[in-house]
Image 1 (tube, rainbow over the protein chains, first blue to last red):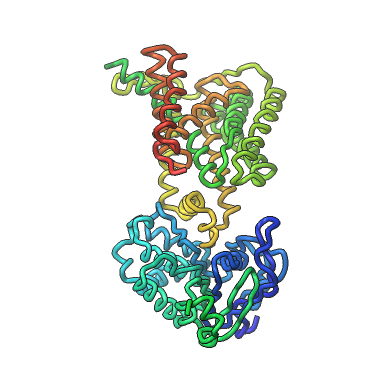
Image 2: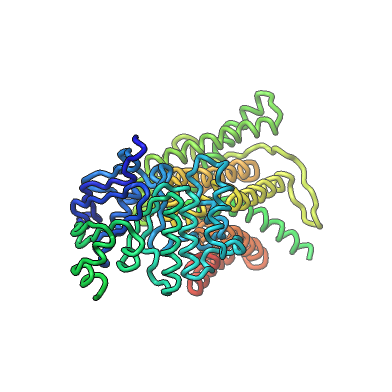
Length: 240
Length: 291
C-alpha cells in the first residue's frame, strides 16, 4: 500500500437485488483529501452503490479497492474496521438508546480503544449542541439533530473515508447549510468524503469532483464546478 | 392473607423459571428475528443429563452438592453443544426468516423428541434432594431447593438486564435487535453477535434445566410445557423486550398459581390463553413490544 493510494477505487461494479440489476459497470474514485459527490435522481442506484462499497450487498461483478487494498465482497464490519464510516440514508440511529450509547457504538469496531475518549471530546466539539444531551434517547432528537448524531456516530469510528447517503434530505434550508459546512469541516480534518445526494446544487457546491448516475450508469464525471456549469446538469438536476 | 403470601411465593418460583425461558426466546427473537420453538429441548437436555448422571455420582461417594454441581456443569455443556449444533446446521441459514425458521424449528422439535426418547427412555426420573429442608419467609413455606432455584433465576435475569445496558456485548445485542443493518454499518459483526445471542439464550435455558431437575420429575417432554408458557409470556410482554419478558413471565405464573387455587387448574390454563387473546387485541405487539 502506497501513501498516495486512491482512497476508494470502485471499478466496473455490477450489482442488483435478486435478479433485478441496478448498477451496470459503475466506476468511481475518491482521491485522498477530496470531497466527491455522486448525484442522480431517485432510483438511479446511488444507495445501491453505497451498499456495495459498505459490504451490505454483494456485487455481481467489478471490484472495490479501499486504501489500495482489494476489499471486494468484504463484510460491513471489516470495511468499518478498515476505516470506512457510513452515514446511512434515513440516519438509522439506535432510537431507543441514548446519544452516548449511539456514539459508543460508533466506535465499536475500533482497535485503538485508548483514543476513543479523546475522539469523543473532539466529535462533541464539532457538535456543541449535542453535548448537554448525552443521556437523551436518540429518537427524541429533531430531524436535523438526528442527522448530526448520525454523522457524529460515524466519526466515532475514526474513518479515513466517510460515506454520506442523502444527509440533507428532508431538512430545513438553514440545517442543510449547517450540514454542508460540517462536511467541509470534516474534510479539512483529513477525512475523505463520498457524498451521495439528490440535492445536486448543495452537493456540487461543496464537492471537488462529481459523478452523475443515471439508470445505474455513470453518465458524467467532472470537476464539481464544471458540472455546476454544465447545461445538461443544470437542466436535469438544478431545474434551471 | 397467609394463603395469599404462600401463593405469591409459589408464583414467584414458577415465574423465575419462565423468566429464564422467555428471556432466551426474546433475546433470540431480538437478534435473529426468529422464534425458536426448539428452545425447550435445550432446557430438557440439561435437565435430563443432570437426572441421568447425578444418581451414579452420588452413589460413588460424592456429597450431594458436589455431585450436583458436576452434573450441572455436564448438563449445561451438553445443552450448549446442542445449541451450537442447532445454530450452525440450522438457524444460521434462516435468520430473519420467520416462516423458514418456524418450519426448521418444528423439524428439530420432532427430531429431538425422538432422539431424547431413544437415549433417555420415556420413564420419568426423580433427582435426589440436593438442598434439604424448608424455610419460612413472611409466613410462606418454601423448600430450600426452590428458594435456590428462584434466587439463581432472578440473579441471572438481573445480570442479563444489567449486561444489556452496560457492556459492550450487551450494547451490540441491543443495537442488532433495534436495527441490524445500522449495527453492521457501525462495524458490529452481525453474524458473531447473532451466534452469541443464541448461545446466551441457550445458556439461560440450560441453567433453567439444571435448576429445575431436582425439584421436579424429569422426562424427555419436560421442555414443551415451559416453552409454551415462556412463549405466551413473551407474546404478552412483547417479543424482543427484556422487561416485557420478565413481566409477562410473572404475569403468567400468577394467573396459573392464583387461578389454580381459587378456581381450578384447567380454568387457569384457559385464562392464560384468554389473556393472550385480549392482549393481542389491544396490543398486537405485546404490552411492551415494538415488533
